[in-house]
Image 1: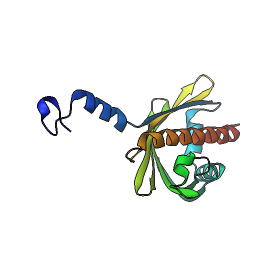
Image 2: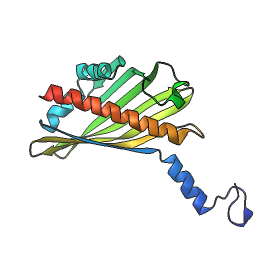
Image 3: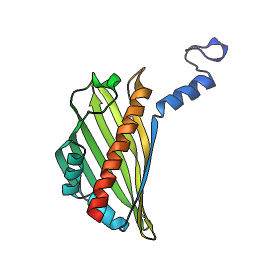
Image 4: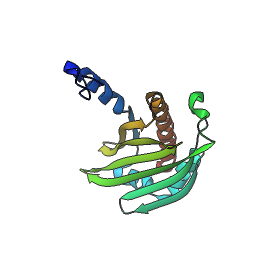
Length: 183
């Protein structure tokens, strides 16, 4: 790449801005409210049985679930049914996923740092972000924000969009399960 004055290796400002936007991934934003205090919601989100049930509700198989203090890690075989057909031929019926959440107190609520990773044909699929559990007058507001990033030249942006859609499905199913458990 040549930039100002034809110098090789020095990209123009516009090219750098475009590259930075492409490297940011696709945003994830999901919110839900629950009729229970943040501590009760956190107790479920860090309960091994709940995490296994969540994997099953997604049609997946929890291969390993560990909760060690504020850190929960789930290794699961996640089904790929429903992914866009353009990607279906590259993956099998499931993909190995590792999800890790580290919780810290946040005022009267809790903050979870999220990291979800998968490898598909040697390419990294990664979702990073945070979940905030904040008290409301009648329970808890859960807000998940993050970014889906796929390390795949040419199709990365399209794949990130598909990953973002899958994350939305996961969060909606988790929401349904949380609501049933919280009453």
